[in-house]
Image 1 (cartoon, one colour):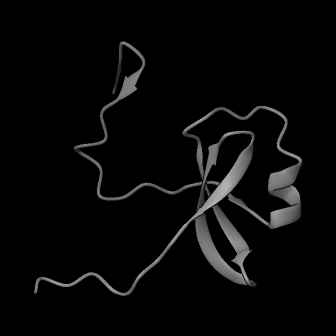
Image 2 (cartoon, helix red, strand yellow):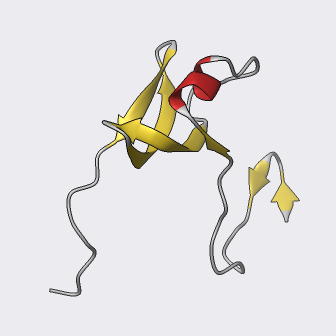
Length: 69
């Protein structure tokens, strides 16, 4: 549901982000700060998430698996 420009995702199980390669991400024409994508080869050839900030895509660092402990 979209209210006042905010998407409420609380009732969905997961979100599928668009997938790009590094080269494809560099050519996305319509970008905005805070936009997030999945990059199939974005961290030394490994998949990563990226957020657009300060005129470039920034990788989101992964630091291990989630854990209850």
